[in-house]
Image (tube, protein in one colour):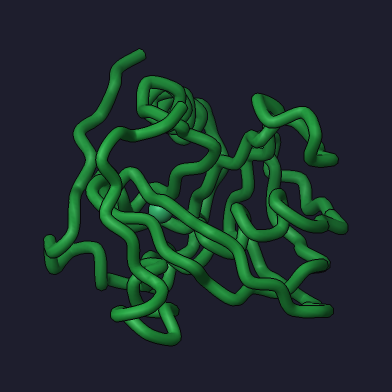
Length: 167
Ligand code: NI
């Protein structure tokens, strides 16, 4: 396993859309293990998307279980994720390993229904809420070349310099 290097804003590659995964095999699982190690090595790493390490395939990992007051499914590996339903709206503060110097307030759906392949290539459906739903929406955005910076209502009011990256 290996910790991969993270692309950071304003790297243009972060705007590139990712393509679907065609085959879920051992080679893909080895990449996912590296991607997960990279996420866990980062400060506050509750999610990562493959494009953040320069791999433009539709793969994200989310694990918010380090924040136990938020209900969650534990470690989620989502391959070719598709959000099927959105419900409710909430404003929340987000950070990103690719935008290390800032956090921002972003509006997201409170509840989502999602389908994705798991690491065995099986299609699964999930109902996600709150912070976990937010984290998944943030990571799926990376697959479409979007950062939370692109979703700020106002850079002046909703963007905050980060002095110390909080775990
Ligand atoms: Ni991010």
